[in-house]
Amino acid sequence: MTRYRLTLAYDGRDFFGWQRLKDKPTVQGSIEAAIERSFGQRVTVQGAGRTDRGAHAEGQVASFALTEAVTTGDLVEGCNTALPPSIRALEAAEVAPGFHARSDAIGKDYEYRIGDRPDLAGRIWLARRPLELSAMQRAIGALVGTHDFASFATKPRFEQRSTECTLSRATVDVSDGVTLLRFSADRFLMHMVRNMVGAVAKVGEGRYAPSRIAEILAARDRSASPGSAPASGLYLMRVHYPGEGAGG
Image 1 (cartoon, helix red, strand yellow):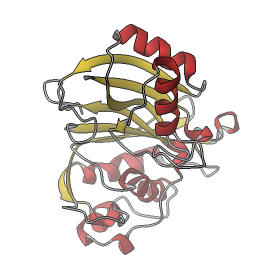
Image 2: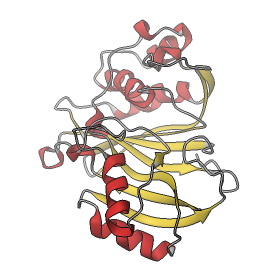
Image 3: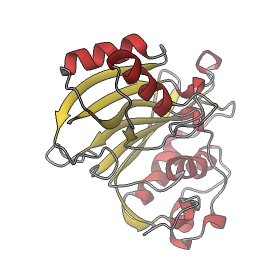
């Protein structure tokens, strides 16, 4: 058995999220089908993160093992030949037998995009209301550091070991008319980025004072925070592993 790590980009509009579903198109299912078509081997692909329906990636990582080894170049080419155009394999590498894309990750970078850009519908949060950048910049800094992020965590169906995370970066700026919120952390809770964005956006709209973000964080209660931002603006940008640095 040879184990591989595959880095992927995808447009989430065509899929019902990452995780394989029996009768709906998903990113995981598409990759597994592409590998079987190209190399005649049925595999189970593990992703570094289970992105939501409609969310995107520019640096998702998947891991899997093949019983018959192929070169990394052939792996990328074969996947891209069989994958739908909205998923691209960017690069591949052989990894240690025990490597797991999710459990071996030590950090992730996410980006969230907001703007009044109809040409980017489905690729951003299409928000018509102007956002006050300086207010958002004052507010978002409260999220940096090691905190209990229970206020920004949607309760998962499984038992969660902890709601404490360390954010090394939380920034906001504007490029080409799109507001970009960037987050780097050692781990993220379920819907955490979308929930943080929902609160920071209210600051930008003038509905919350910048100090409100710190108050929500301190409450450690999901009911203290507003609803989630839509999945359409969310991008998994990079996954970090030991020896590569955690970014931020």
